Image (cartoon, rainbow, N blue to C red; front, top):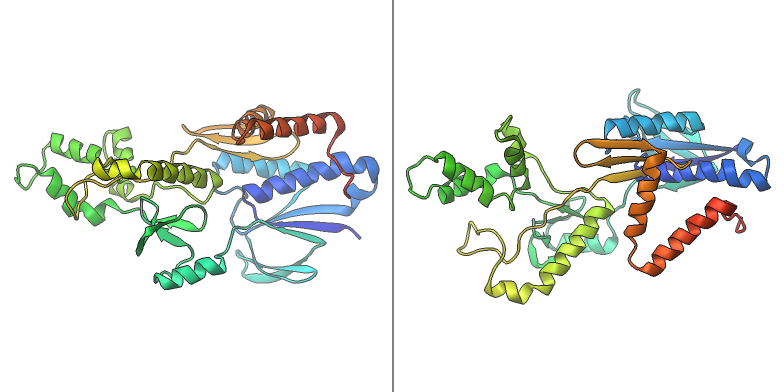
Amino acid sequence: MPKRSRGACGGPTGVEFAAELHVFVKEDLVKKYLMVPNLVRITVVQSGDHILNTFDERVSSFAEQKFQRDGIEEKIGCRVIGVSEKEIVVKVKSEGIVTSIPYGMVVWSAGTGIRPILRYFMEQIVQSKRLSLATDEWLRVEGCDCVYALGDCTTIHQRKVMEDISTIFSAADKDNSGTLTVKEFQDAIKDNLVRYPQLELYLKNKHLRSAKDLLKNSQGNGMKEVAAQQGTYLARCFNHMEECKTSPKGPLQFKESGHHQFCPFWYKHFGQFAPLGGEQTATELPGDWVSTGYSSQWLWYSVYTSKQVSWRTRVLVVSDWTGRFIFGRDSSGI
């Protein structure tokens, strides 16, 4: 009876696990257990229309084609509504029917839920109806300014330009004429660029193609790179807190006089990788640049190594990769 391994998520984590498990079974376990590849089937269950749907369409398409070549089954448009001892219960969104998928092992990587301690805290500050903790641009918890939060338990409430348009206009209209000159408008854009990152769209395009561009949220998502940048930002703020009390570094306050102590958090996207097994990786970098295949894998190796916190971990990671290249993956624990 074939053993079925199901991965309940088509995001970067679930896709990487499915790809690496496939390589482990086909290239390493087969050397010790000849029948294993014929007994294992790997399936990725994804509620969206594509796997890696947060990536560029070219990356998503490349990953789907590679999985098809590798024999990894994809259940697209299927939302998991239950997991029993032997079956996964899914709802096929296109047909509206509920069906069951048998499994031998399930790996769940479809995001995180709210921890009990966080749920209790949210109830105390009247945020109990939210799915994550709301913070402002300075990562201060809304309703509790003395508490800071970061990571995938939070959502930054990025203010929209239209919410403060009257205040912005009043501050920009220095001669109280009721209208803005071109220079006053440009100065207003530059003065508020830090507070409203979506205004950068105007500076890049030199004109507004659509008023909706100013309403877009330019903050990050729940990826670990966002949390890393948030941690670095808060550490810098805490280290300079006393200094910034006397000489604030942030933008002009609208409701009070003076400036904010710090500049708000601004996520800078450096790109993202999706390892797909078989020494192939899909890469998406700023500037609409996409690379897929073997060359991107070596770029991923270098970036992954450079992100380690110490030289000790860098040496351990590289030595582990070297051992895998020479001897294959370690299967002694099976």
